[in-house]
Length: 405
Image (cartoon, rainbow, N blue to C red; front, side, top):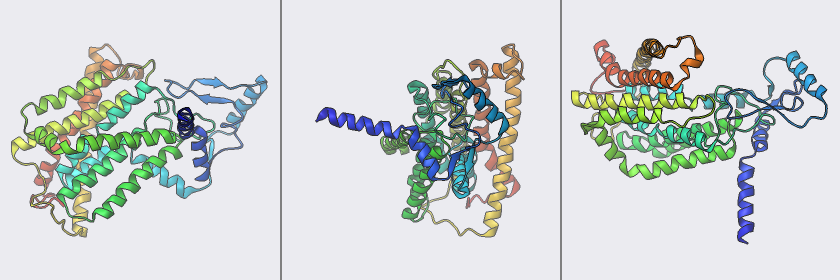
C-alpha cells in the first residue's frame, strides 16, 4: 500500500510537470502551433532548455529529407510559429506576465514610495529578495523548462534559464500578499477587497507562465509554495528587521556587503545565463534602497505617512491623480538618467581595468565585469529613489509633507 501511494504521488507530480499539460492549457486559451510551418510538429527539433545557446536535438527521424523539408518550410513561413485564436486571453496573459518582470517592480515599487508610503516600499523591497532564492534554486536543481514542441514559447530572453521554481510566481505571491499584510497596518481599506485583488493578480501572473510556455504547472506551484513558506516563517520578524534596518549602525555595511557577496558567489554554470545578471540587479536595488532608508532616518525626514495608524486616505481627486502622474514621470526620469549615466561610466571603467572592449558583448558577460557594473548601477538607482527623488518633489512643490497622496 505504501509503494502504491508513492507511485501514485510520483505519477501526479509527473503529470504536473508534463509539457502536454502546458500545451493543453495553451490550446484551451486559443494559443496553438501554426500548422503551416510545422515548427512544433514536423521539423523534429526542440531547443535544449538550460543551454546557453539554441542547440538542436534531433528526435527520431527515419528520413533525412524530412529535416530538410522542415527547414524549407520555416524559410517559407517566417514569423511567429503560433496562431492566436483568442486575443482576449493573449493580451490578458501577456500583460500579466509583465507584472512579474523586473522592469515592473523597478517602476511599481518606487511608485509606492513616491505616491503612498515609503514604509510599504521598504517592506516590498525586502521581500523582493525571494527572487535570489528562486534563481539560485533554478541553477542548482537544473530542471529544464517545458520543451517545444509540444509547448509554444512566447518568450526567448529567459529560455536559456532553468525552470524550477517559477520566480515570477514567487515574486508575484510575495509582493501581492506582503503589500496586503503591510498595508493593513498603515491605511484603512476593505481587507476582503484587498485579498481578492492579491489573489487575482498573483493567479494571473502564475497562469501567464503556463500561457507563455515558460514553466510547467509544477514549477508554478513550487514557486507559490516557497514564497508562502518564506513569508510564514519571516512574518513574525518583519518589525524587528525593519527596526534594525533603520537604526542599527551596521545596517548600511551589511546592506552593501552581503548583497555584493551573494552576487559574486552566485552558482557558476557551464554556459551563460541571464539569471546571475538579473539577480544582481535585484540585490543591488535592495542594497541601494536599504542604505537610502537608513540615511533618511539619520537626516530625520523619511516621508512616511503621519499616524496614528491606520490612517484614512484622502479621496482620489483629479488634482491628486495629476500630481501622482507628474511625480511618477519626474521620478522615473531621474531613475532612467541615473541608470544610463552610472551604467555608461561603470562599464567603461571596468572594461578598461580588464582590458576589454565596451562593445564586446561576451566580455560584458564575464563575472568580473557584469556583477560590478550592474551592482553599482542599480545601487545608485536605489539611492536616488530613496533619498533624492522625494526631496526634488519638495523643491518642485509636488509633495505635501503632511499628506503623501
